[in-house]
Length: 231
Image (cartoon, rainbow, N blue to C red):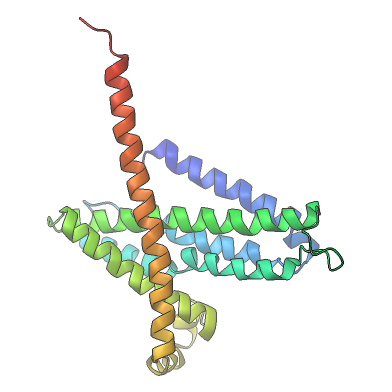
């Protein structure tokens, strides 16, 4: 990502966070959590922006470790969509959906945050995978796909930890022994099924983005060739 695009992403997130704060968090409503969750969803993107293929091994390891700790916060925001259930948009008398702009504002904020964090999170995931493979000179399409899916699987475990164990990344530094105990005791069939569900969602998003990007690039090249003057 170019320096210009990096700052474009940062400024866009800053503007969105300001929007979320003044429309939701400052009013101390039921969706005030969205401000913090969006910040947490952005943090791994910032770590990813610092990762480069040709980097000192120690620096690369530290940045990648921090990215992996915080990355699940990005797709985690997708689970906030369950809070849409609190909107209750249907009229109890008619059974029809009400045209209530306040409800649609909350809908917009929840969906916008989920899309922004999860999609930019996917960019950071691909960037980290590409950088690591290029650093060790083992980049090829198969290795990239394997590493990407592995990272998605790990992030799905992280989503479970955040959503149901309520373990935040900070706890790993504040009380590591207790965190390790919780992590060792969490494994069971229901947990693994949840991880599979989250992995399916993320893989579908990743494949969709990959296909869309490849298709647009192909179409753009065809348009450029067609636009060239004939000799």
